[in-house]
Each structure stands twice: as structure tokens, then as C-alpha cells.
Length: 338
Image 1 (cartoon, rainbow, N blue to C red):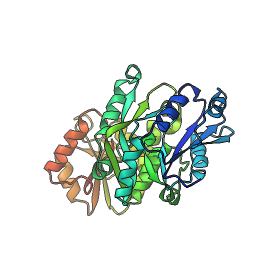
Image 2 (image 1 turned 90 degrees about the vertical axis):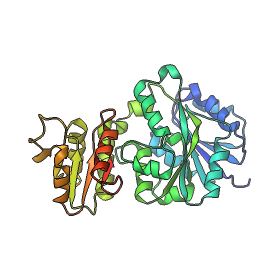
Image 3 (image 1 turned 30 degrees about the vertical axis):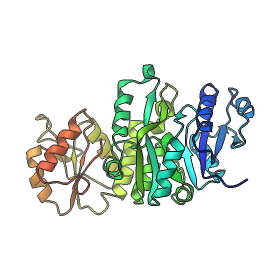
Image 4 (image 1 turned 30 degrees about the horizontal axis):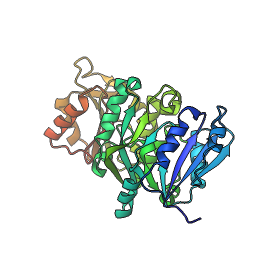
């Protein structure tokens, strides 16, 4: 059989309740030059029987003892034959033209390493406000510059919406166990390697929300581990050639992030806060200054970087406005990390 253009990589563990619907959405694609590589990760709920009853010759099942998501992804990747790999989880759905439109982007622009799409969170009754806000934020990041600007805030591409070049994914180390979310780690590695991102500005993937999602049950997706991931890549990337670090935010997020930055060898020279009770005191032995002191602190350092680490709703926009007003440039002089 000829090598397909794209391999759809789908790990599944006890996904019988939604798996048929997910596979139906792939089989309904407007293009048919694909294979589906399903990794049954030791399911015990009838998933294997469901897969055995499917008749599409384009689907291959790789059975494994239960090893967990990350090893299952790498096992599936090793069985993908196509030049492109499209991700989909067993509880999510593709719109019919998803693959055709993403592959058109990848084929037309050889510099694009990752192409995502906007997503629709469903079912509405299960989509809490926090997840809705996250999806809205993620969907607003469409261009490469958008995605890179917000890379250290949260994961900017929904993993089940991504299409990647297989050889490039393998060259960058595939999926790696670092103790934090495997998809966010992947985007951070692509970003660190200078790879190019794209996103189709339409929701071509329906992202199912439910209480058993890994983001809710797996400690790798905890806030603390996301902060560890950020500190790891910040210290080796944007902060590596800087001689000074200023952290805006002496509250919970700034405190927690700075702990991991210090462990990575990046001790702040100052914290910035707007709370009068904090200004003039210290955090981790470092002075807390007010916004009106940022310019003087900045000028006292040779090549500093400021990290805006305030997670309160609306704070990011206000901090951006203030820093731009004192002639600091986002991406060059400061980064938003919350």
C-alpha cells in the first residue's frame, strides 16, 4: 500500500464511550490520503472489541500493556509512516475539512513546523468559566508572532488540533518525560529551536471537556509543574544571556515562579508590585519596588529582562500598557508569563 500523506495518531485508554464518534469524524474527512494509528494503552472497558469491529483498512491498532499517555504517544509515533502526523484524542472530534485545510498550509509553506486550529469546547454544560476563558485566549492566538508572544503564559495550541512534520518531531526528541505536560513541553522545545507555528482561524476540532481529562487528573498538568516548565525554558532561552532579572508580581504567581527560577540559576534583582503593603519589603531576600521605580532599576542593570507574573484577570493588559509606556518592548525587554 502506498505511504499516506498523514498519520492520525490517537492513543486511547478506556475510551470506548467516545472512541467510535472520534473515529467516525476522521473517516468523514474530505481527504482520504491518511492512516489512523490507534494505540490501545491496555484498555479494560471494551475498547479492544470496539476497535476490532471497525472495518476501515486505513486504521491500524497497536496494542500495549497500560504504559500511560506519553509512552503510548511515542509508541504510536514509531508506527506512523506518513510525512505528517495529526493528533487527535479519543474523546475529541474533527470537522470534515480539518486535515485537508491543515495539510494545505503545511504543503504550501515548508517553514511551518506546527499547524493547529482553533477549537470549540463542548458540551456547553460541562465547560466551566475558567476553561472557556482559556479556550478563548488560545483561539485568539493565530499567527506565529501571537503564539510566540504568549508562549510562556500557557500552552498556546490545543494538542489534539496539531499537525506536525514527522521527521522534525522525531529530530526534536518526540515526547519527553520531564514531569510536566508533554504537549506544553513540545511547544516550548519547538519555540526554543526557532520553529515556525501556524493556526487556522476556525474551530476545526471539537475539544471535549469532562472531569476525567488528563489536565484534571494528572499531576503533570498542575500549576506548579507548568511553572517548573516555564522556569526551565526561560532560564535556558530568553534569560540565558541577560545580566539582570526583574519579576513583576510579588503575589502567589511571582513567588512560586521565582522559586523555580532561582533553582534554575536565575535570581531576581527586584520584584515589582502595586500593593503598598509589599513595596519596600523583600521577597526571597530581594527588594520589592513600586512601578515608579522600574525605570531606575532597569537602568542600573546592563542587559535585563522583566517577567510579568501576575495572573489576576486584566492585570496582563495593564502591565503591558505600563511597560510599553516607559519604552520597554515586549519580547525584547519583557515577557508575560502569567
